[in-house]
Image (cartoon, rainbow, N blue to C red):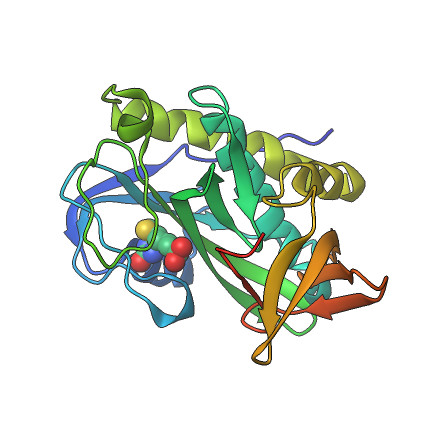
Length: 251
Ligand code: BTN
């Protein structure tokens, strides 16, 4: 297997608007793949769906890592998401049990969210160029604003405090392993492991699409990222991000 080492260059900042924005500018200046920008505080931390990502000063990991997956066709771009989510699970599995991936790429412990991922890709024709992989992992924060739906942190789960540097190093290591699988085109292993880690994959649950609720079981996730659901009547339906939501009180 081809092996890459990510996180050789780690840039620590006290404060930045968003590590994703900062790293995107560095990527244009041709910094090396694997470069990490990590901030104690982000003034404009960005989440998915145009949301903000709020994190108390110096309590959590908020960082971005630069990938240059120029070997990957655009239509397989979701594999980057899969390896990043798996790498976070690989690290967190060492500390707590019950880690899963809520499709597409939220990291959950039980029914609470411990980490979020925001990946911003650029392309060169039909091939990937850069991936700015932004990760927010709740580590030592124990109080969260009421409007954050269902947050948790490593400290809330274990009662211990964690060294952010050491945790970042571990994440860079598991990211290097998973990204090496991607470079080596072990797509089947990646997809099998990702499916194995999916939140709510073993039973029928309630979902909502186009204002209609229905019960279905997760059938798979395409390399393009579409979620495949099998309804109770046996139909397979596919959904892109934003087209479907998990209904949380539905069983
Ligand atoms: C989500 O909404 O779940 C994604 C959150 C991603 C947050 C991280 S924190 C580091 C990086 N910089 C940002 O501005 N966002 C990502």
